[in-house]
Image 1: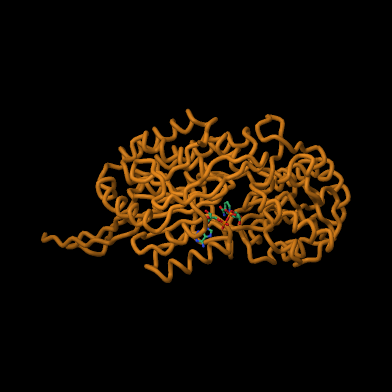
Image 2: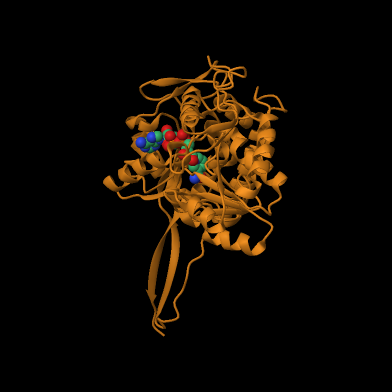
Length: 479
Ligand code: NAD
């Protein structure tokens, strides 16, 4: 008997998967079994879609202010359950408990913000049709889906489910196989807050379960947050099935540019935090750092010292800076990049697994002398591994920063305001930090990736509208 609830949450009930298939989930800090996780199959999903289709029209007719009230109650329940939610993510994927509390806090804040947006389904009118009242209106899609990753499970759950359900849709969310537990508790809290049965449903399973959603003929929109290759597969499945609307939040290989006039202490601290927070498992992590040659040695010494002082260990301890990678597979992938880096360049710090902390821990690492465009320089590692380059001129720095198919986040550190604004405009990314970097950001602004980092936006003032479709209505009247 597991200590943790892991059943599917379908139509207001916790249920076992119809065929009883499950897979084991291990705690990456200890390798202990956490729970056996249900695998939803085609039958489960067809039944669920039918229930969601039935529940959705009444929910869409519920006045927006009532939907907003339910969301605010849900946010309050999340706050009441923040320690439990943080614990669930921590035992699944190794996030330090105190970092998980920050994840839940942002989830509460953004859910309250979305509640405010629910009453703003603004449309338009025409001045060109005196005998016809021409208006545009926004309406929900019907049944929609969300597939999420494991790195910020609570926050990303709320980024999709709350605006989608707030807009009047019925939502089916598939959790990640690496962090499925929090999603089930969130669904229970949503039900307790007043979302009717069938409006918020949570299922679990591997990639094949997600593929069933992206190919489903009755699901009209899908939002995916995860890796670029999976995003491509989801878009293909949507195109081959019913051409459902697709929005994608994908991977990154974010550049951070350090000019010689920057505050080097603050910049080194921000750069190291960006690549080590959540054990480097952040889509926006500053993984490529470009430092102006004249200050490169000083910057390297500062960054190495900060990394050496980070504490790796038990995610439950309040002084732990970094937990393990999310699972043994993730640790093995990062370790394979460390081997490639050792061949191609020089590790200034780290470069190895941290076996003294546990099987799945990786020492925070900086590689220098890595050839431009090599595997380590080009691919998203999703671990605490920074690749450090030197540059001479602003043009060279911008050109090298943009020489990637990713475009999620970029940052520039300088005291020269003109240069900061010039470079911020020139960087090819959906999000830019000036004298700050990821994880800094504001949830009232749209978040999305350029190039192969995504299509569409989450967060921001259009978050609820993104889950509606437009309709133009002409009403002829006489006189
Ligand atoms: P992933 O692509 O491996 O998996 C994400 C989700 O997709 C999981 O739930 C998985 O089960 C599911 N999936 C896998 N194959 C599928 C398929 N063929 N069809 C449908 N669903 C499928 O990504 P991950 O390892 O969970 O997460 C890490 C990635 O997520 C990184 O690339 C990171 O940059 C990205 N990410 C992006 C953002 C963003 O906002 N842009 C945020 C967080 C993470």
